Amino acid sequence: MRNIEINNRKIGRNFPPYIIAELSANHNGEIQRAFEIMLAAKKAGADAIKLQTYTADTITLDCNSEEFQIHGGLWDGKNLYELYKWAQMPWEWHKPLFDKAKELDITIFSSPFDFTAVDLLEDLNAPAYKIASFECIDLPLIKYVASTGKPMIISTGMANDHEIEEAIQTAKENGCSQLAVLHCVSGYPAPAEDYNLLTIPDMAKRFDVLTGLSDHTIDNTTAITSIALGACIIEKHVTLDRKGGGPDDSFSLEPRELEQLCNDSKIAWQALGGINYERKESEKSNVKFRRSLYVVKDIKKGEKLTPDNIRSIRPGFGLAPKHYEKILNKIAKQDLYRGTALRLEHILD
Image (cartoon, rainbow, N blue to C red; front, side, top):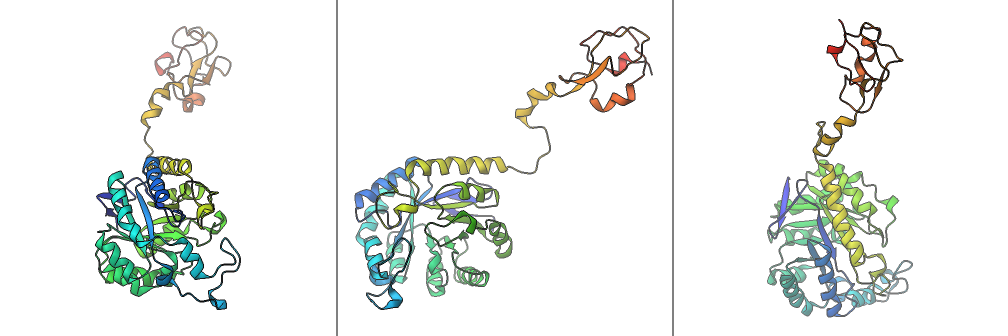
């Protein structure tokens, strides 16, 4: 699969990295804050803003049994219902957010977490869909999203190779012709050493899909490195303030860091280029400063060329240094003065 296209933006190895700013729960219950994050993402140069479409009631149960409790990590002490009630994006916000994206001229789409979320997003004419890592094994959901015919991006956190293959196969067999898969580690935050970025080119080859990275590390190093390994999409959580106190703030990028990601990932992509051993344009003016053979001590006509009177030095207007041993002990055809670039016509055969 050479490339996909979202809102007329081509995505693939031959195009600059596609940067997705994940708004997630960083609205912290305020739609104005969501608007401000969208504006910051646009100013930083992100290609898209992404939402998460669920309610506490569509993603879990209001249940206090042990299986629904969260122990450890960022959300320690809450149950699943409490977490998602805190984090959910109100459904009535979706249209204003889509309208705001149109005003800002930035692409917006979402991760749906059940069929009703897909229906809502279809009513808003979402241009693409993202399947979150935790839903990678929800094949009925993937099938339903694929049936829209829209481009789909699937995150693979926690999924093994068999589960990834099942998700890809389900998407392709049910109407998705434009698919990308994001390598992901579903830790919040995730340590860089867990990422095993060499998985990215293997995934591209093994499953014949475009690949990218959903990055939960707390800086940009992992994301930039992934570009060199074939990632053509980078997704990062974005907030206005990492100390904002929201569910996802602490492992999100602030606007300045997002801008750095957008700029640096493009530079990394440009630096990859292709296989090229030719002299580069930026080098051409420096060719004259390479080493060559020069007269370093005056030589009379008929004298021998010796290590005492010729040497390999900069600049590069004389014979290439590879000729040095061949011309030692040859006879000067004419008087040669210190600083002369040595040439074959100066030497008797």
